[in-house]
Length: 228
Image (tube, rainbow, N blue to C red; front, side, top):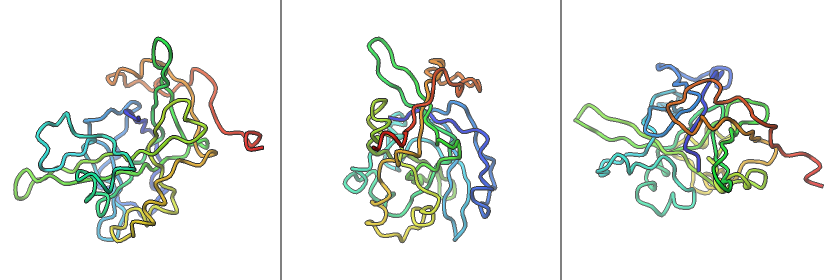
């Protein structure tokens, strides 16, 4: 399950020309949960970039360490923590990539998963609002995960769901029907994502060097020949 994100050099205004950015994009080569994260939401008919806490914190949550940073797609309609947010409060987290760890006999090897073209990815997420006073509040989010596709399943069993650009409006619209939403909660197309091994320094969330994203091996990607 994804526990780190790579967020660097994202041309968001090129991706979404109408995006309002009252807050700067939070960038990090190794962004861990329990930290602020940038999300895109639909507010009064406009896409808007804002900062959320990465870890869903509904008002009744008593222990911050219990705030989930990921939500399984299969439980969105059955778990009370996720049900209302899935129904009406969805967002996307723009990233340049995310990390997964492949289990090996004596250690785990980190991989950076990116779009093969290295274009930004929009990861599907939920958000909620916790009022600390009548006028002050904190917004928080959790990524939604789905089973890994055939290409990346040897690395991990689950991946964040990716929302295609053409489906962004439907995903963010609180009035979109459940059937349409569920159709988007599918593993990524085989040709969309690739993954390459990176330094194990990524294991330390305090490590914030651009070297986090430097490949230490070749990219794993789907080849047309694999479909034959």
